[in-house]
Image (tube, rainbow, N blue to C red):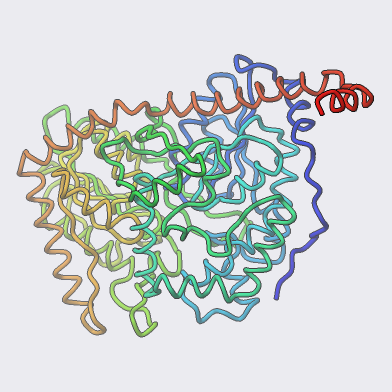
Length: 564
């Protein structure tokens, strides 16, 4: 097994002492505050935080991000300060290869569990990795000294645990369709690896390194982690208990409803949610886009895509709209076009036999892109709609697929700015950000889901009348070729119908109005500043209590005697 490196017992500092020291330099909610933002190398999870950070910086506050190098450019564009999680969490990353979820692949090899499914490996090693992250994260927070912490509750639970340990308020940013979406999304992930709920429960109960890590973290950091997390009831996100509130990037109308059991479980722990709608950045802002995990051998730096052609694309989109020409935007997201081994470019779904089968991410993208080309492709650049296609970071992503003359195909696109300019249809993978960004701008959608909450959003698109879904094919072995052809044909048909029928656009416009009323970035900023101010208020109250003269022992004894 693998032990915690440098794991001497951590003594929790008195929270009042820590917060009082911070308050001396930044007193009062009207004064500049300092915030820590802790997010993963996952575009869909970090992008909604960027406009919040930008607005805080513009208001005179400081924002410090702990994230991965691939996200540095987008983070620094907000005016925030970037810090590397790899550099600051050596207990996990030293001597191991970083990936999307900590150092999962390296730990899998260390334990000899390469044969297990992705879901099983995540279940076994998530808490173990959090235990390794926490010492470095706590050191970093002590140096940064934030007034409040914002974090991703789906991939950075350790942020809430560290903030809780240090007495710092935290705010979760949930980038799904609310707490009610999580049970279904979890089921989708389990199904993707052909793993049952009972199997995962058994894994948590019987994997001794997980059990030991839970016990150590509870004892060392004054936590109450469960041996079987997020399953009492199924889909409950336990980490939210440690935060002041949870911001949700949708509106009340588009939230997935919670079961009464789930709602009661959150209410009993005082967990609150606030739907703030999509968190959209200003025009021209950089955002985390396609990325790859590998490092470039020439200089050792992480691969980063440059968005040098985005302004030219945006000008062409605006020019098309000015003359009444339709624009169709196509994007299959960042994960499926990335290099995640199970969910990325060459990833496949795991079948009942434990073997991967079906279409790879590459085949899925090629078929979806091909469907768009079939639906609206033209012989010249001026004919037909302007097709704008986001390809992602893979070299030669189109392969043998030939785009028509009226298509602009680039690795990175200014998606929100294009949607703001107005599109006739948006072919999307159905990730929560893209889904709500499209609807916020009144764009009817064709959803081609890959995994997780994407199939849920695909079904929601049809239920709301804002678009159509084309489910991911799941062919038998040797049935991939006809499945690709059928999928391409269905995508083309769905696009033609969504563009032709005005009912989809009218329904999308109704959703746009609902999303506009949710509060957006200004409301998210208010919540963060209030969290910092709440810390100051508690500091002031505790400070006064500490300064009050203590009663003499003899007086206390006399008082007790008199009341007997």
